[in-house]
Image (cartoon, rainbow, N blue to C red):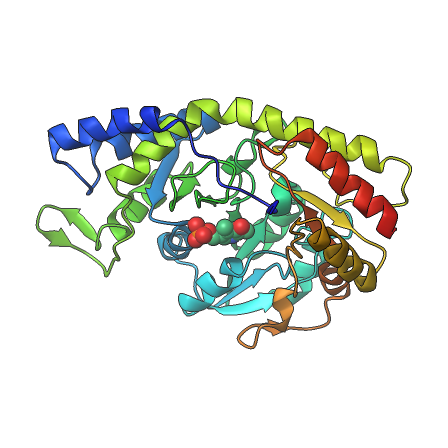
Length: 357
Ligand SMILES: *Cc1c(COP(=O)(O)O)cnc(C)c1O
């Protein structure tokens, strides 16, 4: 079976080297030395001031909401993974959906602004597939109405925008280091911020609200990452440029094979360097998506409808009509893309797609 995405595992010996250190120190979790080293190295990889690593990306989003004091209403995107909506809802926010831009499928500032009310506290926007949001447009709306901007940058590791990491925009960007992501720690996530006070508060919140040895100022949670998980990150981080280059080669095979077909693909703003985390396609209609999924299944290839259905349909969010997101959710499909996908297999998949079209 060729899956849509596949976790990358490094040579076992590289990981075992780190295990030996863990055994010697008997320091297994609680802000251990490997975790601290990983935070420093991810910060320097991204060019970020603060990186606060958490047990997963969902908790990072929850801590971001708390650390920024975002409550009341938040306006977010219906075209994302469930956690973008469920984490703010879990934090007690009223989640309001605004439509996305047709080109990038990211949150449309022009759709956000009319939804702002006096209780709106934040915009939560996803750089979906590593395609940058309209940071200028969302920033303008946020400044005008005193809102915080949280970016869900779970797809954006390694992507660049206007000469900097796409993971460093907004008041806070949150990352996911889940096994299926481009860079992973098996489970894991992070908050990225320039704000010293927000970073410090997030560090306290991830450790039960602890401020000093015996002082706890507000209720926190356990969002700590273990040394075993941090070790995986330390092994993988130096390989990221090579892994992105290999993904780019597979994407180039798809690009070449699909050239000349009247196929729309979500597009990146100028100034973007893609990380090739995904290979999304907008097929002509839903029936074609289903036919393609069936045709690929016969070749033992998994086609994911990532992201279908639109989050606007969730029973716990508020949303008006979302024509762009609903249409995209019906027509979207992601072709398999991971660093060790054989280019021959990519060619076979593209040929199956040509036949269906
Ligand atoms: C994976 C993902 C998350 C959640 O991350 P976890 O680490 O699995 O909690 C959030 N948002 C998006 C867009 C994701 O793809």
